[in-house]
Image (cartoon, rainbow, N blue to C red; front, side, top):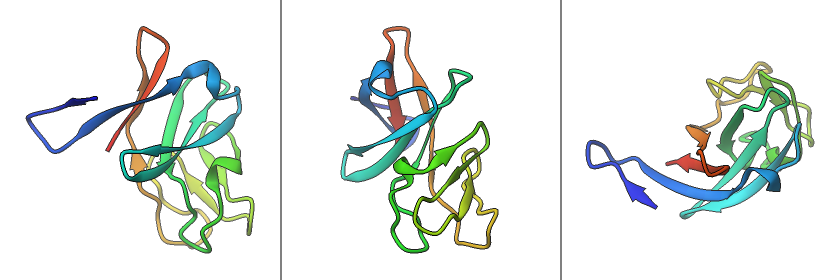
Length: 109
């Protein structure tokens, strides 16, 4: 874990990329925060808060495409880049994430 001294952002090592199947998500405890991390078919990764703000549904279990995640409980949809709901719910917290040259996924909080 490294701390960016220019801000309060902390980068956390989460897992090897291979731990997340293509087109799916997995939930991780990142620091004290639960985060859903998704591996897109394009190779991009994205991360948002793990629980749906509507009823706490497990977003890591939701269906994704390049743009949205669909909560598996009530089918609410959220933009994975902005966190905005496309179905009238409160927005999600989006966490910057990336895959390093070592093939490990990192998430910033």
